[in-house]
Length: 257
Ligand SMILES: NC(=O)c1ccc[n+]([C@@H]2O[C@H](COP(=O)([O-])OP(=O)(O)OC[C@H]3O[C@@H](n4cnc5c(N)ncnc54)[C@H](OP(=O)(O)O)[C@@H]3O)[C@@H](O)[C@H]2O)c1
Image 1 (tube, rainbow, N blue to C red):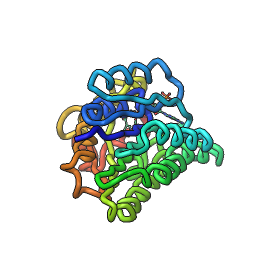
Image 2 (image 1 turned 135 degrees about the vertical axis):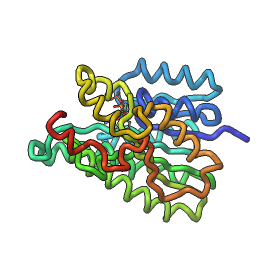
Image 3 (image 1 turned 90 degrees about the horizontal axis):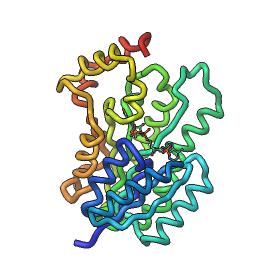
Image 4 (image 1 turned 45 degrees about the vertical axis):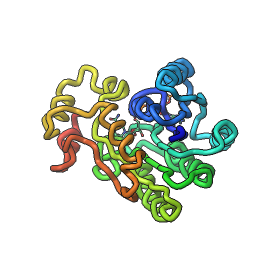
């Protein structure tokens, strides 16, 4: 089988990087990030060792012109996209009362508008077997301190993904959202530094007894984009070790975090 082409946004670290490392066995890779050229080059080398050709692109997804140029660059280089993983996200982690419209516009431009544009550009370049995977968050389902804005954007992302499943399904393209629980990325480790009380609370509320790793999320992503995932579409797949099964610790964490 010929190699497929994967675009993974925010692939320079954390979950996005782990997904690229998994997909590289049978995908050529677009390694996207915002500003860390050294990290992007390192990921390109890693996927290269697995046989993947790669395109490195540093683009701020909040910039509509940048997203447009990004799509041009991907299509110029590969001519098609088989797998789009919308993983990148950034926001202001503050109470909603402290945030203004400009914060909302930035978050939604990064998480939602860029995704609508990428699907608009890449879906016509997808054949049967095409895959759209969006990375959501439990903040779309549960109010978490400082996550109001991101939760709103992630709720929009879930709804959009369901519609793409319906609209693109007849062409053999699936669309799903993975919702990770807390994942031990560098970003989360930075948050948890010196906060063993918060770490313990998260672990205590996770039935399997540990927090997710980026590899846990990447394993599920790799399954969904494989031929085995052909009949899973329009779904929200939660990968959280069960932390949401009883509602999670978010209420108890309100005054801790
Ligand atoms: N980690 C968790 O516990 C967790 C839990 C639930 C959901 N998630 C979701 O999973 C996804 C990945 O999380 P993560 O923790 O792995 O992320 P991360 O370590 O914070 O990495 C984010 C990636 O996205 C890129 N990025 C951020 N804003 C961007 C922008 N405006 N334009 C272009 N690229 C941008 C970053 O590039 P730069 O480094 O260059 O900025 C980086 O490559 C996110 O959607 C997050 O909401 C994470």
